[in-house]
Image (cartoon, rainbow, N blue to C red; front, side, top):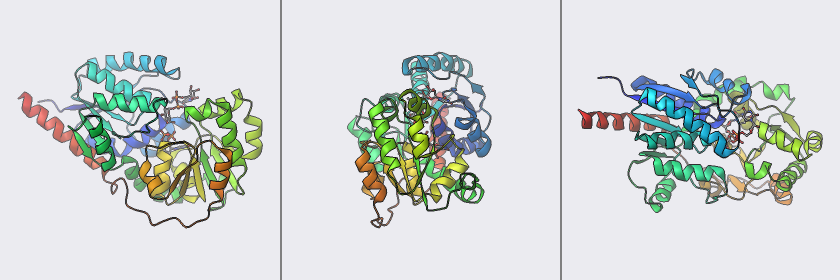
Length: 365
Ligand code: UD1
Ligand code: UDP
């Protein structure tokens, strides 16, 4: 009998981080075919993660590149469909909530191939967010739903999804645990930018609602600029384009320390050394919690509600006054509750995948 094949689909920066702990373990127990959709393609948004994290070279790079949502997703659907047809996988594994996630899930569902979703069951409750559409549709297409917390189990049950749900914890915690020490020892970016540990604020912004609305983006820049500390911003290409388009780049360069996107080792080093972080990223909210860094979230809602309830994350939206106030908060942070598992999520995902493949092969014998 042939070894079962898992086709894993990645394409955007956070998915390289999420796949890194899973892919390694999966390859010990099944045949993995890794597909990079090409959604992210700059060296600093893609290759650097494969190099630093020793992620296997993808068997396919579909090279879809950038376009609006429908055009980008359509290109992925067409290219992925051909790969699924030729590889005939036993399972398609997708991560998170990007267009690459949805494309992988949809192609598999249409070809009657089972789908596994890592980071299932998360909701922001904001349907205007492209990622929310991707999450809901991907979960609906999924046979195996690997969720980070009990809350996600309840969310899925509320949508009528109860079969195939496993609480694994967060694979990004596994990734942080593996790279944390190396990041603190090897990150060169603090010296490069002349930063003193504990004396600067790290900030990241790339969410569509914040970059495409000039008023929100300007309010975020002004809120950050009001900080008494230096603000360091590894700038997502989407945000750089938006600052140029909205005529905000000059002001931003004057007020903040901008740098190109950095690799994962440098980023975790920056995050661990920051006095606090301000972000609209999903992943960074959790990584801040894991690295004991206070977080201010530049959004009106979050999927990572537990970090807010724990008192380590504050939602401030894109309001410059709120950002200014939050940057000055000095109250003690509460004791950290254990959230999102103990750093063994990747093992649980792979166990779930392998048991599923075993049960399918018994059923077909
Ligand atoms: C995507 C995901 C988002 C995720 C983010 C992680 C969707 C709908 N959005 O958003 O959920 O949080 O990735 O970073 O899937 N660009 C480059 N070089 C690159 C990649 C992008 O210049 O390597 C520029 C292009 O101008 C592109 C823009 O960034 O149009 C946006 O890229 P895209 O992948 O469409 O969305 P993100 O904002 O990165
Ligand atoms: N990240 C990075 N370099 C950066 C910014 C982010 O390595 O300059 C990492 C970060 O540590 C996290 C992931 O990229 O693991 C988050 O990606 P992003 O914020 O782009 O996406 P989101 O999590 O919001 O989907």
